[in-house]
Length: 127
Image 1 (cartoon, rainbow, N blue to C red):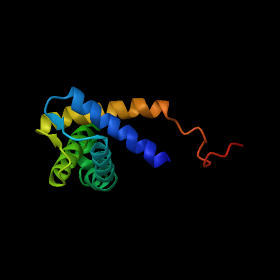
Image 2: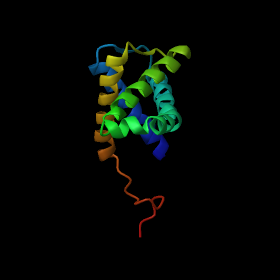
Image 3: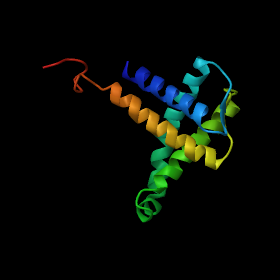
């Protein structure tokens, strides 16, 4: 259930980026957007940690600001993978990816605040 909620939050965050950021487009329905959100989640789960490890000195040198660049690259990679799968999600360039990743991050955090894990990490069992 938690996975589904995270997937929906990511899909809504991506939809917000499409609505707000020029250069990010999506032509498709909610199912396609959920698949794009799944791809985005997989990219962030597998590629992002490796990229952060490889760019650790640069992240330290910029006092963490290079993370914004990594986030933009993850959104851009998601766009590329989605385009190759015919899902209709497209990011026009790095600037759009940068601002889009910022919007996705902010919306995800805000929505996650409202959907807290009230079980305290005990699989819904309260003590």
